[in-house]
Amino acid sequence: MTKKCNELWQSLNVPVLVNKRELVLGIMVCTLAGILFGILFSPKKHTTIGSNNGNNSGNVLPEEEEI
Image (cartoon, rainbow, N blue to C red):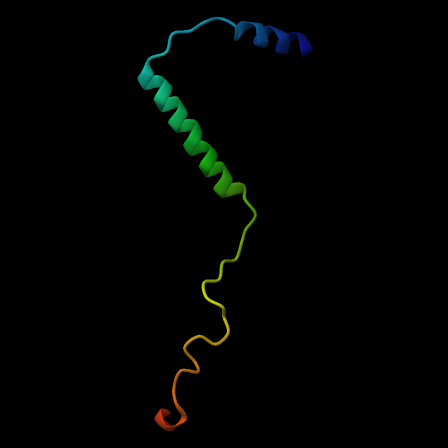
């Protein structure tokens, strides 16, 4: 196994010409894959907007309440 890993590592040393378009597309794919990976494997969070302390329930004066 180590021999195969070393062969792979040595084969990566060969220079390769890449178009600018391919380079930009590769960077974009890696970025989007990282964002997707982060969204899918992040711990689930419960987001609450507001303080959850009775919003819109105590703004009415007693004489304006309907019975």
